[in-house]
Length: 284
Image (cartoon, rainbow, N blue to C red):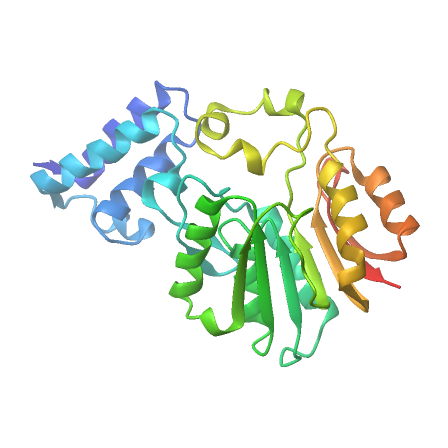
């Protein structure tokens, strides 16, 4: 048997040797998962023995990380907007910057009891849709995705938070599905990378995360924004909100599309490098 601190130290060296930058953090997350403990509690347990079965399981998970598999897929969990979500290959791993979309919408709608109809286009794991349903307790939502795999993951998260009665999932191409409802909020984090940008991503992403959720249309990163604005603006109520996460150097073109289709930009979120990452628009 080995001590907690010994296992973490050894694993950190092994991960660093594989050029994994977050080596110690990853080792701690994996061991805390195996021990069913909080990561910060490992400090209190550093001189505790880890039994043989636990160490074996840890080594299996460590091997997965050495092969660049993202932590979220290994432990089947990712935190987003104060909740934990079941995550598996087939759905994009939620990113912290995507939480800005929830923050923007919540800031504009003060009445948390308001009856709202919400549409999440490309719902993936369901983190955006579920976060909004939890934020607005009388709201109902539709999640649309072209990936059956992603929708199965989304279903598990809907079940976890007991939101069946307020949620409907739809499978299909957004340009082919028929949606007759009118919505108060449409939210989307669609694929926005050009193929050339995708090729530059890290192995963690390229080897494991679904390409269909990342790449837009070869060399046209704004393809899906044009399609969403064109097809779904008629399903958004006047005074309704449209929230997008967008890619680098896409702001000017998306802004033009929105303005030309009767939208008013009411909020935007800028990264430290001055790139606009999130935008909120009002239907006029």
